[in-house]
Structure formats: C-alpha cells, structure tokens
Image (cartoon, rainbow, N blue to C red; front, side):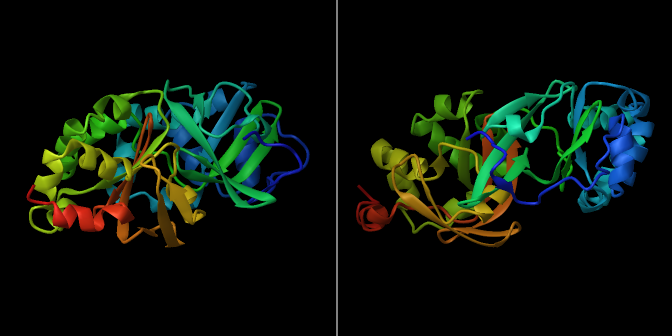
Length: 307
C-alpha cells in the first residue's frame, strides 16, 4: 500500500505555518509542542546540525510523548549524553521522506544506523493511520526547506535491536515459549531478520494456566504444537495502533483471531490480554497472558493430552 494524495490520513495536516520554514528546528519551534525535544537536541549536540539545510526528516516526539516516558528513563537520557544522542539519532533520517513515499512495512534508515518501520493501517474505506516503530504519526509532513517533521506520540525507546527469536530466547518470562518454538522447528522463521511478523507471545504463567497434561502432550506432538504456535503468529506487523483498528486477523496457522480493543492500552486477542509490546527488527511481540488455542483443537488437546 502506497499513500496517494486522495486518501485522508487520520490525524491530518501539519499545524506549522503555511510558509515553509528554513530548518527542522524552525519547524519544531513553529509547531509549539516540541519544547522538550528542542531542549534535548541542544543537550545532545544536535541542535546546530538540525538548524542547517539537511536534508532531514525528523520523527519528532511531542512534549506529551516525553511525559509518558517513565521518570527514571527520562533521567537516564538527560544524564547520559551519549545515550541521548543515540536515541535522538534513531529519530532522524538524513533524507526527505514525505508520507506520500511511505509503504507498509517500509524500513527507513536513520542517522543512528537503526531503521524506522512504517506501518499503514486502514481505519475506514477513505482513512488510514500511520505508525513509526509503533508510535502514532499525529501531525505529518510539516515541511521545511531542509526536509520534514513527522510528529509522533511516543518516544521510540528502547532502541530496537535483535529479532523476535532473540527476544524469546533471552526473556526469562518467555522460556516455555522458547522451548516450544524450538521443538516445533520455528526458530529459523522467527530468526529471519528480513521478516515482518507479529507473535502473540504467551508468558510462562500463561502456559501454566493450561489444563494439566496439555503442555506435555503438545511437546510430544510436533504437528499439534506447530499448529498451536502458528496460531499465535501473523505474517505482518501489528503494533498496538494496528490492533486497535483491527477486528479479526488471519494467523499463519490459517484461522482467525478476534481483536477487541477499548484503547491502545487495553487489547484482547480472543480471551488473552495483551500485557506489553516489544518491537524487534523483524516485527513485534505482543506478550499475552493466555495461550491461544485454535477453535477446532480445544477438544483434541484435552482429549489427547496424555497420548
């Protein structure tokens, strides 16, 4: 999907002055709710560079985005200039990238060497919403001679590194899932750095909620185990914004899961609650509190759990 001018973008229209400012800093000052970001660019030694002619595209967290950061994270950024510069450079592209050039799952290289993943979600037949590494783009294409400011509603932190599989194997709360994925032969798939996946990742506590014997039975039956695990995988990236605007999504296993969301912070996948979101270079983990079972397998799993 590529954006065209006739499509209405949710959260439309840059609020900067219609006359094009010279630099990215000029745009940030005109927008009016980027005071924290402007201050941090000075602390990180990036202010003068962003006052130049670029070209640049800055994915600019607004003041509210910085307020949403935990206080200890904000203190850490302000006390560690090296980390602060690294984080801010992961929001800056050394090119002009207007939204008309964006495509779903596009990866945009940043000044810091990391990529920003663009996702485009349908809201209605004539409206879409845009995200950058899961952050909502709330004020797109504020234009300067030097480039563009794309205002976002979250700070893109922590910095994204590693694959979905490296997260599963290193996260102590996902050790049961790691064992299951290995036994099902899905490690190569979830390790592919060029993948575009969403995995609904049950915690160890979620697996412990299964009826007695079911997990052991699954681990002995690779076919059934693979069917259950691929029912947790989508072949595209759905961050919280994407889930919020979804109703049913087809899994890699072939059947649908149902999404019910009252906000970006309150999302259910079937009967499982999304606990947290973890972005990786090949997609996103939506950590859940209940194992998802394909509808046709409920009886089979309980009936054959000891075989």
